[in-house]
Length: 128
Image (cartoon, rainbow, N blue to C red):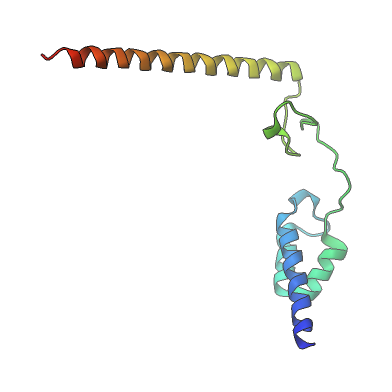
């Protein structure tokens, strides 16, 4: 029975601490995120109960900001809160230019490697 009275508050405090650390700053209610973490650390039982009742973020769908992506053609950009261009056409134009520049750089690198290989092959055959 004593072990239960020790483990339950400990598990509750660890759960609340992990939840407080992993929550976003702007979603935590009533106190700042750091204050909630300190409260849970210094007063494990009371701080954990207070976190669950008053500080825990509400899990309602979050509204996106004016410059946040709602959907994306690229999975690495699907994170909520990631900013997007305010003009999708300009964003697509920018991405097209980035792709063209990357292809040009790849072509130049392949050409330079080819020239280096031809220069090494020509220099190795000439026993000067």
